[in-house]
Amino acid sequence: MCGRKTRSRLLLAMTIFGIFFWVTAIIYIQSKEKIDLFDTLSLDSLREGFSQRIKAKYRDSIQLVYDQHNRLLGRRGYRPSLPKGYDPKGLGENGTAVIVPAESKNDSQKLFNRNHFNQWISDRLSLHRTLPDPRHPMCKDQIFPLHLPATSVVVVFHNEAWSTLLRTVHSVIDRSPPDLLHEIILQDDFSDPMGHAELFMPLELYISKLEKVKIFRNKKHEGLIRSRLNGFSHATAPVVTFLDAHCEVTVGWLEPLLERIYLNETTVVCPEIDVIDDKTFQYLYGPNALMRGIFNWQLYFKWALIPPEEHKRRKSPIDPVWSPAMAGGLFAISRAFFNKIGTYDDQFEVWGGENVELSLKSWLCGGKLEIVPCSRVGHVFRYNQPYKFGGNFLTRNSQRVAEVWLDDYKDLFYYVQPHLRKANYGDVSQRLELKKKLKCKPFKWYLQNVFTDVILPNESSIAKGKIKNPTSNMCLDTLGHGKKDDVGLSPCSENSWTMNGEIRHPNTGMCLDRGSGKTPVMKACRGEASQVWVFDTYFSKVTPRRLKVDPTKA
Image 1 (cartoon, rainbow, N blue to C red):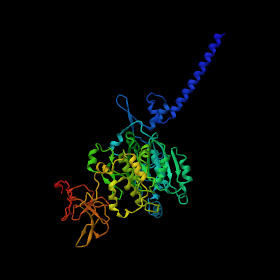
Image 2 (image 1 turned 60 degrees about the vertical axis):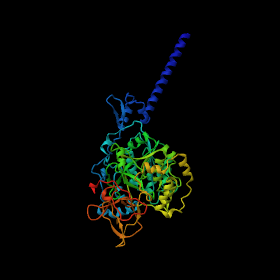
Image 3 (image 1 turned 30 degrees about the vertical axis):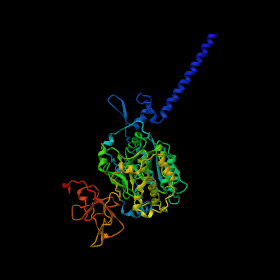
Image 4 (image 1 turned 180 degrees about the horizontal axis):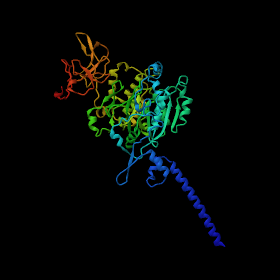
């Protein structure tokens, strides 16, 4: 009797254990099918046939690459499918220009005045419009590490046009690998509900249908810098990518950025920025890796041609470009590294200067700044801002950067802006303490190793000032012309030039070139014989720089 009871109890226990085992296994399998691809891939379950449903999801999102021995090498760039209802002849498709018909020009101009870009055209383009692929062919064959970090994308907006804002959002969703796009954070900088009602309840309802998009709102108008910090505070991914609210990303834009941070967390990366024409919304792009960011001694950002030494350092046309400075609107950064180097100066106002500060901190405090040629993002460049802030915030921000990061070279900042010597820039003691805590390198190191072709007004130049003709009492002037245009004479103004063998214009950074005709022209500075000038009289105790040029090219 006892034996029967024991066997019955044993059988019951085994049955209960079996049920528990299979229930646990089913729950485990279902949970594994719902986890992110990042975790699924680490188990290599797909190759073992773990789940047909995961296989299907995997195949749609990521293309794996194996070697000849069936060993996993990595992943290819994400290749999205065409949007539903795609019409290749649709308005603006493939980034083509749109011309406003004559009968709509008045309406178009009104909307242009509102946003300082052609909203009339933007409103008629698909939110999912296609773009050309401007990448170098080698970019399309790249193989990326399997476990790239995911990113939060932060987009700040204020009174933005509905169509440009949502086209930014959809381009990111449509062209980003789902496993790498953690979230999109829209940070509203106190938009005006009276003139932009669509940015409130209609926008809330619209994004409620988008799985990864969140919206947060400032309680007052903060400006771009503090709004970005507000958006950053909500980001939870290991990498944070900042975009402006009138961008369109292209195919393959994200993985090249994330790869650089994956390889080195202290690398700050920018995409190649293409132009979306503000009047026609045509997507315009040029060659890869042609320009890098620099700044002048007012600490204003500008673009410049990549110098020969940087071309020599790069071994491939798609290698990242070391850039002394960033434009500031579009970049990705490790969330941990951004926090470590103190994000932005919290005493900055509105916008401006934060891009130079972050550029300098990246280089001087243990990191570096790169432009990644295989990542291309279009941006609507506006010639004027549609909204105004009071105060001289841009100058004050730049002055704070100079006081903290330029060391003794801040004298050059004041040399070109002597009126700021007595200006109030606030307390910078905390930023100086941060610089000391991080053991940042001196600014001189930056000039010797990063911005090596910088023009130092009091060291590199043999003269500075107006170039005056004593007979006419007129001065050399670009006449507002661009590159390769003739220069001329005009009444002498406050504009000055620097001379060091070359004659360089301070605002454009271009050099006076003899040209091919009778009239000199402005061209990019290349150190060629056609840009070398000699003078009858030099400053005392100054030896002019002798450029090494090929006389056969003179």
